[in-house]
Length: 276
Image: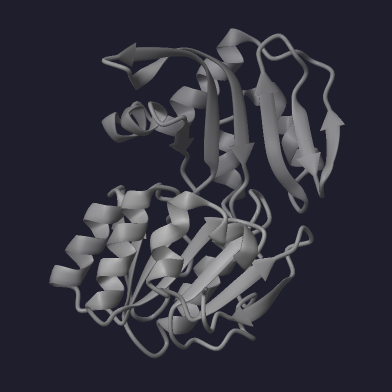
């Protein structure tokens, strides 16, 4: 297991850094910071509460440390998250700024959900790297971790173009695989089109299909003869089919195999066959 632990600690206020380092290096999954409330550390699925309350300055310290004042981080903050060094994702909640009905930023941030990024080489070793593969599961069940290792496994035989929209799949220090080409910070539809035109991939990999535009771009890629590696929020094939956003995937029979995660981060595979 690999985790950019020092990068995580560097974005925390000094008092919180000591507490986190003492308690959570091996089992920490999330840090939840809410203004004027005690920090919540999720350790192995259980919550541990610290005594000191989180201040406005503590929230600002974390946001500034994670974003490094970069324009790209400011842009993703409008979508409700920042990707910190080491691939740790920080969810943001607070007072939003809207223009023309669209969220353009956050005026004040009240809460943070810091999800710890960990790499587990070998978790995909029993997956046969053939055809298009979709990973399903709930948030926090290990979809990104499994996808990352599956990408490395597939890259042993053919080039894999990774559209790493949030910079979480392969942060600095994580093993990228022998034939992996990564496009970071690009929306999935545009990134898929760019990879098709320029990189001659065997697979295209994306994390978290969330919009119909993502699905349409994946259908186009399959039509060009490329296999796919992807993740989506669903508990299984029946749940996937019940969600309208994913309709283009099963109508076009895009994926050959589905890997379904359980809460304990184990998984099982199903051949798709006839989606209907």
